[in-house]
Image 1 (cartoon, helix red, strand yellow):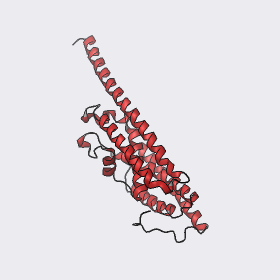
Image 2: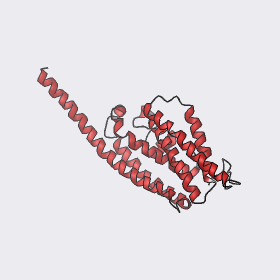
Image 3: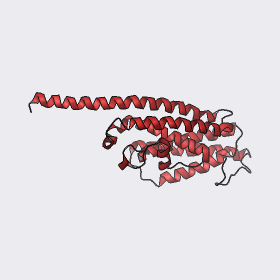
Image 4: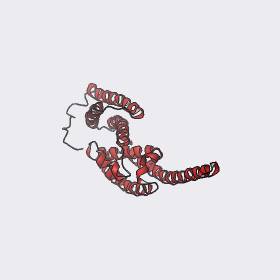
Length: 229
């Protein structure tokens, strides 16, 4: 093979890769739009009457995830299944955002931490990397860490709405989450930095609970862990 033929061959390979990335980009853009719309719906629970309409909002979010499942199924057809990590960076951030939204949804429904398998089921993808398009463990953990920030905001807004029991339940949940992350040996720099931010969420929620205690608003508000809102 001549030098010219070699570089023509290399260019063909580059062009094919660029075509794949462009197809992936188009699908990711639609995913990002759906994620934005879903986030607006989830954020509405922070509004003045949002807490009273959580069940209805959760049903609407579940409908949005049907669209997400279809879009992710399309994305999975745009590249060879054995090259997941070659193109992973193109959808990593939107997938983490979707994990957060699924985690927030499940928390609003049951006040529980969604499992990685359950998130994968909500998104319509695999949890086992051997099966192709899947939910990477670090993407799952990043999404869960974003949930902590959202719950610290919800704790503050719950007090404003006169719901003094919810911040106490959130505090218990976040403390358990923090303990769980302490069990992990995190070596990913990005994930480690996000985890470092969890302590600020813990502190913020502790301040809310302390303020309720000082004002005498937390008396009689303790809710058993098995009781649902």
